[in-house]
Amino acid sequence: MKKLVALILTATALLAMGAQDSVVVRISWRVLPFALLSLDGQEWGESAVAATPLPAPTPTDFQRGYLSLPQAVTLRVISNTRWTVFVQALSPSLGTSYDGTFNWEISALEVGIGGDFLPLSLVPQPLVSGANGSHVLPVDYRVRLPEKALPPGDYQAVVLYTITTD
Image (cartoon, rainbow, N blue to C red; front, side, top):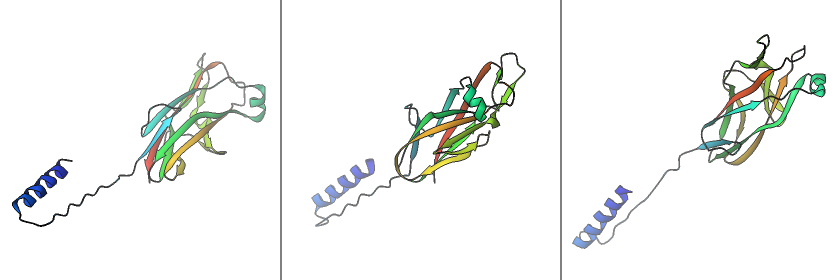
């Protein structure tokens, strides 16, 4: 902005002095690529953390072998370029039983969009990619249940979502 004001003042001074009959001023700008995400309506940023409590499995969950959490979280993306959302666990487990005898490994958690699931790990993995615009992405969780009964405990999925531009 300061350069533009200085350029206009210089051009005006030259005209006033009669040094030129005309002045050409060129203004240009460059729009940088950006991609931002919001988790369940929180603030926009380049990353977001979701801590989702895992409910007690039902008999139907045990019958099919996994706990299903459709639309566990909702990501919103705005971007003026291509983007990719990465996902990773922030903890090596989903928690432990109250008596400390059971540790639910993070590898039991799968995260998916549109029916395609991937097992979660401590390493960032691409979850979904897209083009510029505004997007609403419901994210489903699926948690494989242990073969024996799940002991009472404090279980939750703590997941980091990060967006990058391509």
